[in-house]
Length: 550
Image (tube, rainbow, N blue to C red; front, side, top):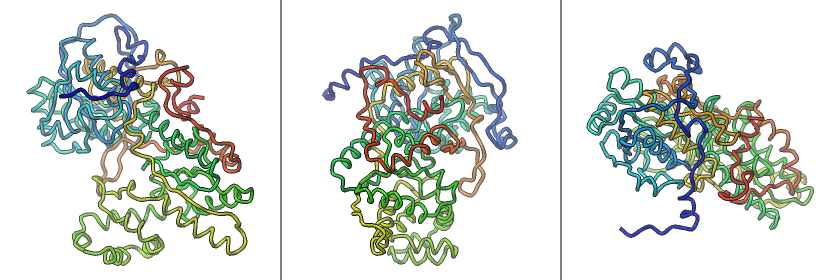
């Protein structure tokens, strides 16, 4: 096979040695804290996870050298891509080799399905070295297969026994780590001798708590998006004639949108959690945008930037009710699926909804209404990423401005451009922060495995300090869980972390957004991710983390 062509940056990054917490640079001793409990529904969660509930938080310190027995480990990349996944595997591999050079690491191909279908490769030094400090999940591929059936667990146990695998590392988001927790409990209950460790991945930033300060990939993705936003703002400030409506990834929370606002200071930033808390309607959101546009027009500023979270539409209470009704209505609905035309489907839906939801559905542009009835995701929910919320807002804002112009209350010009930033950030070369953080997470997982732990998530904290001062250890996955309704049934899942309206990042944003709305010169231009240079340029964590620590 011909060697792949590489850019100068790829070649240089291959030699970068990620930084580690001091405790991981030598011999490690585990310090166990107090027993833990789930974040909610303690009785139900304890009953479902009798073997892995209540375990203590673990912290690593430096200690005396130990001799660890040889282990085989399998690793799975699960869910959407996030910058740094390859470094989790690199850190896991290096940690295993440092603890016992006879250890082996296997990668299950294509996500969790690789475990079930027995598709794997042995990850050798040559393969690992080829993927150090690179973006993407292409080393073994990823997938969204859910591990929720006993037959799947048993098939996984068979291949683990054949390969001598004593532990599985699941690298994924909240749903993937929920699956990891269920798998750990099943293998523990059935005395298979197979441990399961999770690693916190998602660019959305909604897998976080006191022990998981951030999920990996969030830093890099936000820096990539913020560069693009800054470039657009420089263009807007130069052309002075376009309003840019920019939708950003983040279905279940607005962390990405808020972080990008903190980095780039746009004229308008909508935070879904605030919309829901204030019980705002879609028209309320439109009016808040129109107010800024009209005010800027009075000063001759007929341009600006608006950041919109991907999941906004589900946080508008009335729209949330509509979507919930649609999810129930369209679940396994053969009559609807058999209909041939969009108009036929539209009429059917209007007649089947409650009066209030039907009225909202009728008021939506036909294109948006159709997007709400497209195929559901694996959880049975509307695929929010397919809903072009930015186009919906543009259409509604334009209509409102036309009415104001006719009434003599608006004399500006409104021209719009829409954008959606998503895949641009998921596989970027990881920032120094994410390269270091993910490598430390993988290395931490290797120690948890060698110490015989299961049902834990790899945890690295104190992330605003230099990497040498980071605190490594493990947190029981059950500690993060609560009960939620999925497919009509209550199931244990990791609780998603939303933007806290009383948290420091949102408070900072709220205190400054009026200035950002009025002054065109408030724009910040972050520029591209920097890998070499002063630490204050290259190694800084997100604004969110910095404000939370302050």
